[in-house]
Image (cartoon, rainbow, N blue to C red):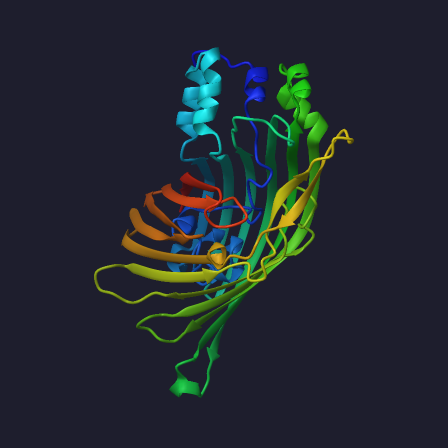
Length: 398
């Protein structure tokens, strides 16, 4: 960075939208997001508990105990680096031009670590224990300030403990369609505790000027909201006996409990449906197609700031998002290229909220690498405010 930018100058020319991010996630696994986020009827990872705990039963028995250590993922918006580079390289007289150049673009930075220990026992019971730590930052530059202040941010730092189990029941039979509906059903349950510190601030110029040397500490001291809650997720996965296509359907009910707190990052109860097929083919060790329809009853929300010039601190509220079917639809495809004790590689692609996703999942011995891209829809409807993001995941696992 060639020089430090005066905070007071940036404050005069930036604004962050209040409805910058929906509150639908605790963790976004690059492997799942590269498949369009469609995992309700797929499973196979310890992180399947974030979409359907019954998916734990798809962890391969041959892997024995599955360990994922230091599973760090970092994601950022498409233009965040050129924006920061242009801003840091701008002379004082050029800062306004730089802000104008990127005005209206959304910027996000997220870092998370999910460490887990999972085991698929021989009696068709799977267990998983996980620890999550994450930070989620959101902002949007704007050429002119408004009623929301000169700088507004909705950010959070949070973590939690997850205990999950899934049990498969065989011998489900039916006389309908000559037994075509025969199969097995898996029931999964997750118990989780989440502690979160959220930071929502619409700072005016006076605040920024007075605290330009300790702005982060000022925001922490003045605007930090501490929330915690306990919740349960319940899921079911039905696998048909058809060995050609290996079809499955899934259902999950997430966040049954006390995570619907009145702060950024609330996790309201949501219902998800999914279906998948895994056709047997000779030239690939794994081929999967999946479709999800998530949050069937549209319980997810956005944060809106209710500006009041007569109050020292404004009220932030959860606001309903208009129902758009594309916002709920997820499509995914996964092609396994190689999977042995030394090397694994999988190509993924999909459709998430109407935009493409893609990614690569690799493991060399105990080193795991995941790359993914997806596009978040941040407005109240598709296309209003789009933010393409890129994810890098790196960890140790076996």
